Length: 256
Image: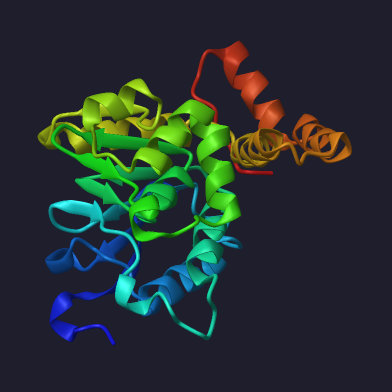
């Protein structure tokens, strides 16, 4: 049972411009994830999956860390032993582009939670550690696949098998981070990436995100990619994008 003084379950905040923020809320314990938090994240993902008004999602933590991973005292939960895996997979499967705003350290399963997002922006002074090998834990298959498909086999082996602490500069070098900024520049960097994603056509962004993830996993079917291609080719968004380009103006995409 989580201590009430430790904070609350993750919150979903909807803001202007179709931007939503999913926030972890246990700063006193570095936003460690209890089963109640995972269930809340699962419910938020289920709602977001069908919410076409959300164009970009930002995932972040409260306080000085992004997330300390799963609360080890609750590893033996019998209701759904794969709950953490299911939640991270649900984050990856969200249709809108996602950004992990890494406001501090990233540990354990949180390393995969952030990796399930499309982009990761970190701040100087943060670090990462995946201690599965030191705990005697064989990580779940989809997480291993994410590491290998996004970072490559050498980096995945280094992070999982050596279980070493990796600093922010090295995380940028190996491709875990897409951008690294000073802590006071983090919000500006996230806002800049959000603006870049808002400028894209929603149908194209959602379709290409899904297709790219399928290709990375080696699970794509050409017919499905062609269907998404045809959907965009017949869309009002494409006609608007071409017209805006010709008229040298900002396009007004409607997601249809």
